[in-house]
Image (cartoon, rainbow, N blue to C red; front, side, top):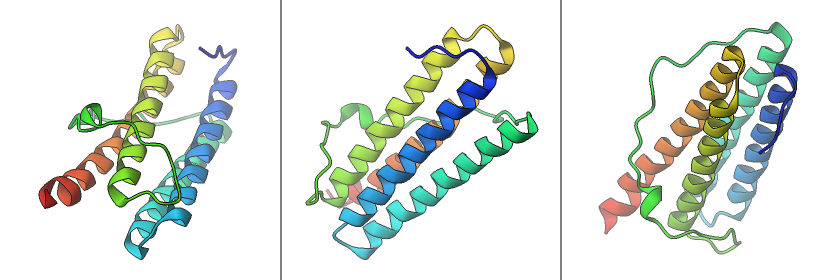
Length: 151
């Protein structure tokens, strides 16, 4: 697991992760078969851009807000088979891929929070984990509303 020497290294890492998420969702949008699917992933890319901007602001100001509550987990992703990105993905496959990605990001930030000794660093990682958990929940709700209700 990556080691960090200070809060700025953590923020730089998280900013890079958010940019990777932006790129990931824009790639999914570009590969989407329908305008509706494309818009969903473009909206998530915009959300990731806002998170990146917030992290850059934290780096500049040195302050951040903790989330108020732990995010609910529907655990849908835990029961789905992994999907590889492809140009011919269905909306269902794209949602599964996105859920799994957000789950992995949540786990990464949670593990980093567990390893952190500094309370401020621990709080920052916990905050980042909660943001990823919110994304996963949104994809799980979408999956439940669109895919599971159709079947």
